[in-house]
Every structure is written in C-alpha cells, then in structure tokens.
Amino acid sequence: MNKGILQATGAYFLWGLLPIYWKAIQAVPAPQILSHRIVWSFFFLLGVILVLKDWAHFKSSIASRKTVLIYTLAACLLALNWLTYIWGVNAGFIVETSLGYFINPLVSVILGVVFLHEKLRPTQWLPVGLAALGVLYLTFSYGALPWIALVLAFSFGLYGLVKKTAPLGALHGLTLETGILFLPAGIFLIYAAQSGSGAFGHLGPVPDLLLVFTGIVTALPLLMFSSAARKINLSTLGVLQYIAPTCQFLIGVILYHEPFTLIRLVGFGIIWFALVVYWLEGMLFRRTMSEVSPA
Image 1 (cartoon, one colour):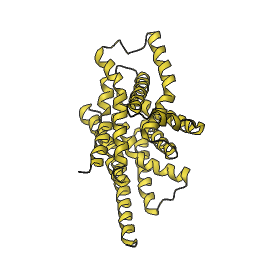
Image 2 (cartoon, helix red, strand yellow):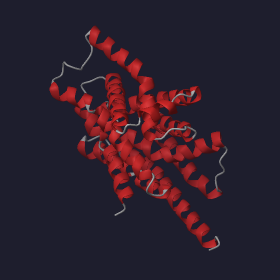
Image 3 (cartoon, helix red, strand yellow):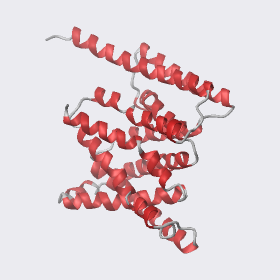
Image 4 (tube, one colour):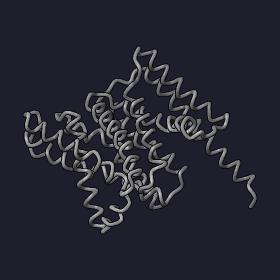
C-alpha cells in the first residue's frame, strides 16, 4: 500500500480516537485541557524544529507582520474549535461532535463560494442542499440547533479558509499558532494553579502525564497528515477524511452509549447521503473530464 495512504489513514484514525483520550482526563475542566494542549504542543513542535535544525528558517519565515496577523486569526479559530470539541466530548456529545466533522467538507464548499467566489456545478448544489436539510431536520426535531456540530464545522472550515492563503507549512504554521496562544494559555494555567482550581498536580500522575502528552497527541497526527498530503492526491485524502468522524461516531454510540434515536438516524442519514452524492458527483466529473481531455 502507498506510504502516503498509510500515513493519512493513521492520522485520521488517531484523530478519530481523540474522544477516548479526552474522556480519560474529563475531570480536568475543558479550558484547562485546552491550555495544556496549547502549551505542550508548542513545546513539542518547537523541539521538533530544533531537532531538525530548522530554527533559522522558522524564525525568518515568521518575520512578516502580515504572516503573524494571518496566523493570529487562524490560532483564534483553532482555539475555538479545540475548546468546543473537548467540551463537547466530555459533556457527552461525541455523536454531535462527529456530525460537525461529517458536514465540514460541505461547509468548506459554501465558504469557498461566499469568500473565494468559487463556482459550483449545478449538480454540486444538491448535496449542499441535502446537508442543510439534514441540519434543519435535526434542529426542528429536537427543538434546538445542533450548535456544537455547527461551531466545529464552521470554525474548522474558516480555519481552513484562512490557512488557504497562509504562507507557512504545517509544522511552522502550527508552531506559530500555538506560540501565539502560548502566553494567554500559560497565564490562565498559572492563575488556575494560584487560585486553587488548577487540576495539574492534584489528580495524580496519570492525568498529569496525559495532560503533558496532549502536545504529542496533537502534533503527531498533524505531521503524519502533512507528510501524506505530499504523497497522495487530494481526492484520496477527501475519502480518507471520513475515517475520523466515523470513529468518533462509533465510539460515542458503542463505547460511551450515547443515545442514537430514530430522529438522529434520519437526520444523520440525510447528511451521510449528501456526502455520498457529493463524493460520487466529484468522482464522475473527474472521470468525465479525463475522458474528454486530449491525450
């Protein structure tokens, strides 16, 4: 099997297992988990840059004020996404968090139309409309907007939109983003410790180690994904990306016994069908274009 496919599969599978990791430290408040994730990710990524002897290149690449501004916006969107996801998982909404990442590709399509003036083929509007119908069905059936899923989908979609115009690679970009968030995260953790509400050092060695290892848990799949993206085509990545929300969904229903009622089944079913239609439309379009293009 192609090494890139293995790396991408591994990255998405690790992302799919994250709910288990966050559940293991659910005694820690979500803002503190987020802050530890930022701090330890920054240390780990900085260590990788130093080991690769890439510090001079990294330092020169972040010298531009425009670059820092772009990544400040990206960092804020990433922090919102991470916080919502961690809170959602530990509050018992793993299934809804998985929904956010199922609909994220279609949200990205909408953002591309709105902000980048990309044109959709008429047949591409069908899956977008179906996904919107699924969200509306869930909203009216439950009497409440699935806000966790929508915040995750739009925050990550906007994050991707910002990164589309960003000049840095994955390693330098995430290092700068966590570096921008490092100071407020560190100050918050110091305040929590001094006020007596800090969890680190008070729950035992295992939770402490898990908090420290959030840096590796965050950075490792990203580095695997970054390497894979250079080896395989985008359409393959597009198919593999559903490994993560599928794992999250199964973990929520099977491992943590979150309710999955008939109403949810219908709503999710509409959205899953929309994704299948979107994927098939793209595959057929690419096949048609390859057949009509000159040899």
